[in-house]
Image 1 (cartoon, rainbow, N blue to C red):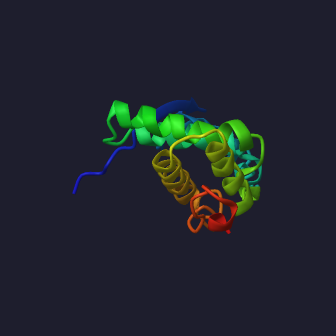
Image 2: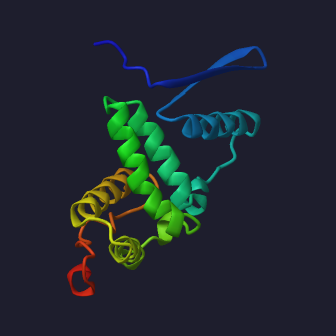
Image 3: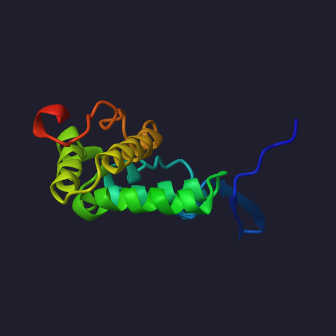
Length: 159
């Protein structure tokens, strides 16, 4: 069986050795290449993955959208996903992904409801937020905090 290549690749030369790095997204590729170079330059040292502690909601949305752009998602769907996730990024993009909680997601959905957005659109946005957070599980976070958030058309439904 042939090895499946990831969509983003780079190669660099270090002391005459060719080093290949592959990743799912451009951001991940940059991080992997930098980490690989550090590991080669500092053999025996242990490097901790600080990105779990440093990635914000906006950073993750950007990475998630890049992942979705590399799968079979149509351009129209990608645009819709981006528009929906921007609601989360605009309000909660500054917080760390690891600190995102149900209340934050509920706040975003409640704000959308207060602005008079259609209930079906809010439901779809909740689904996209949940899918994006689910994709981060195992990589940056341990649990999908958006999985059990109900629609926020009134405060009682979301809790």
